[in-house]
Image (tube, rainbow, N blue to C red):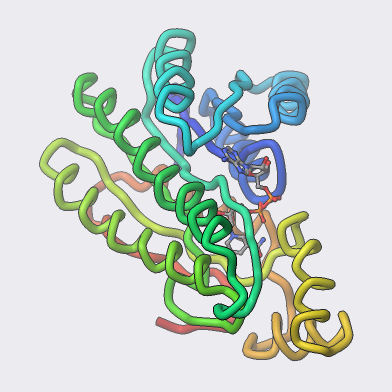
Length: 260
Ligand code: NAD
């Protein structure tokens, strides 16, 4: 499966899963846009991809800001000649029991995960339509697109919401050659998860080891974390899939934690 001569924009690509997705797409021949709130880290990732012989640019983008999203997408189109793949990945986690969950945190979570997915989709899909080349949109969902966990009201709500968005985009985009799918990872050891381990230990009154063993990995078939490579390989598969046979779907990559 080749992504040669394609242009891929990945949000939240300065760290963790997004970074690995960008590296994988670049390895498969795509020119990649490393879009992130953290421009300094985005520039480092882009420079490292270029040093390895790939094509990459870094853009500062807050996915909750319509102007910033539109400007980043415009820059990608201008400098790289279009946009064929969008990986809407930027995300954060805030955990708290619902009776203590701050409304401001709830709004922040929904803005990054859902407004971000909407705004990047709206900006990118117009170019996919106009170019007549179509495209592929991959949303970074989660096992929490299908399952619930304590302390994660906003995250679970947002990740479930992405399934709805992907299905609508699949229906609207299908006749114009745009596919939309969701990748749903289990726990992956990234800064996002490393931050949660002590927070969950405190909130649940258990040790950090117990959080890993009895909360995060309890339902997997083998007690293993999913890796950034596992997720990036799945994203690349969906991004490069050749027909609309695979659209409006979610693919769960979780060591069997969830089987839907
Ligand atoms: P991470 O913290 O390693 O990386 C997230 C990146 O997003 C960072 O570079 C950060 O600067 C960027 N970001 C945050 N807010 C942003 C904004 N408003 N605009 C643009 N960029 C922003 O996290 P990760 O674990 O790689 O998570 C990436 C995605 O994968 C998230 O959507 C997350 O929900 C999802 N996910 C993660 C896991 C996991 O276990 N790590 C599991 C399932 C799904």
